[in-house]
Every structure is written in structure tokens, then in C-alpha cells.
Length: 197
View 1 (cartoon, one colour):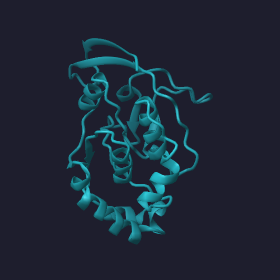
View 2 (cartoon, one colour; view 1 turned 90 degrees about the horizontal axis):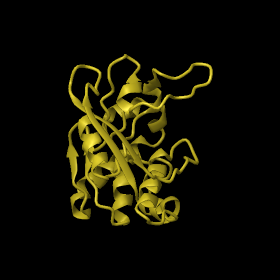
View 3 (cartoon, helix red, strand yellow; view 1 turned 180 degrees about the vertical axis):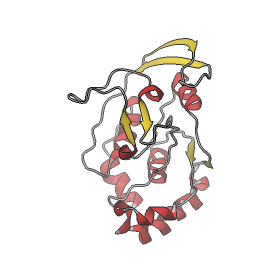
View 4 (cartoon, helix red, strand yellow; view 1 turned 60 degrees about the vertical axis):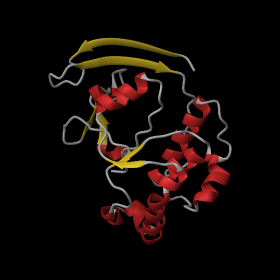
């Protein structure tokens, strides 16, 4: 796993705060989503492959063990990584199920089953060596983790994001640090948290 990091101090957050402008190159094998619901599983596969581990069981044995069907929650990903002996830190803004998800079409058909299953996973997480912490993660922390060669999985709802530097006709993204070109629809700098929005 080779990595190249270029650092220089500057106003890297666009609001006057000094920070590191980091370009971090790490060879991560791309794993595309197969379905509309498996973005987290694809991320887990990329982490496993980067660590030199096989991910052939993720969509089969691991998914079966979670008994979640196509309804994958962030805590499921933590359990799958734990099954592969990947040490992790797990941060979320909700320890358990956010009851507001019931209103979202994606969750409605299986919310009652998911609510009890996911809450139980959170309750048993410590026993599995998964320390889930309720807190937001700031961009500076994410940059520090990447600089230290840690993989970072940040799950956000794509519909809340758009590229400010994309060419509208081609949709091609200019290469800029994430915090420079992704902003929320309200034009507020995006604070990324590893939790379902």
C-alpha cells in the first residue's frame, strides 16, 4: 500500500481557518455498487481489498450472517469489518435507529424489523469489540485519519450533495479536495459524518 502525501498550510476550509491542504494518494481498488442499496458493502470491499484481504464473502456469508437482506445500516458494515478482524472506530450521530427514517420511502417497508434488529446490534456492539461513539466527525479529523494511512468510510445520501465545480454539460468533476467542491444543497460547507442522513 503506497501513499504519497503533499502538505502545505493554507486556508483549506474556505472560511479563514488554517489547516492542511492535503493531497493524499492511496491505491484503493475500486469496487462498484451492484445495486441501489449496496454502497456500504462496496466500501467494505474496497477496505478489505486495500488491506490485502478477500471480500468474496461480503455479499454472501457476511450478508447472510447479518440477516438484513437488502436493508444495510452502518452498524452492519461495522459488524462485517469486525468479522474480517479489521480494527475500526465507529462514529455516528445516532446510537441506534433514527425514528425519522420511518418517513423515508427507502426504509418504510422494513422499518419495524430493522428498528429492533439495528438497535440490538448497537446494544451488542461492545461485546463484538465494536466501540460505537455518538458524535459528529469534522473534516479536520477525517483528513488526519487519511494522513495516518487509515481508511475512512463516510456514508452520505448522494441526493444531498452536488458538485460546485462540475461542468454542467459533461458532469466531469475537477480534481479538488472533497471539502472544496462538495456542499449541501443549502450552500453550507458540508460536515461529513459516518451516519445515514
